[in-house]
Image (cartoon, rainbow, N blue to C red; front, side):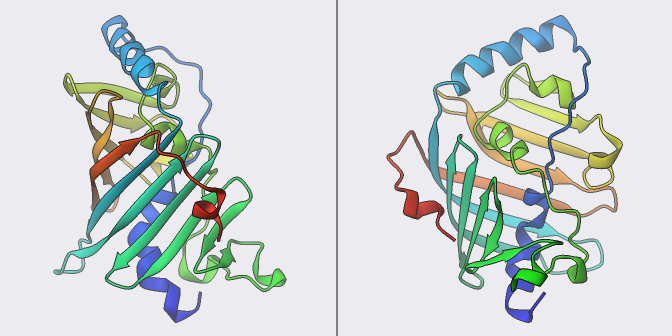
Length: 216
């Protein structure tokens, strides 16, 4: 990847590495019951807008890598991050790919004039549909992909069931809030010890979003 993309994309890459995992498994009845409640609440969400602050704690780096900006979500399979600090950059995640600063990134995009993620050790790129369930809320379906433990009524830990996902993430902790029970805080723990924490504020549920919001 070219130098201009490295730092902002690196800050957000743990967010991008949440693939869809399909495994048929069951959770404890009380966990399923609470997930159903949360699913009913999150089912009311079709679009979302929020301010975000992300802090990445890297084991080999003393400084915390911090980024902030605006986050948009459309449950039809579109997410956009407008990073304002430290370096302005726009990251758009759609079913047809990931776009950074207007350029498509991915293992197969270099031949089309895009940026290759392979050189920055960012492969594999995500199966993007997996992001919607995490950021729009959780539901009973979450238990198919993760072992779910409730720390308290509105705070839960997700441990990946898939080996391919657990190679990237050892656990996700989500704190929910608001009438729609959308994530207010997401903590991503990586096997190597790195931790990424994302805090959402000024959350607006179901704002009207123009298609231009998700344009690369």
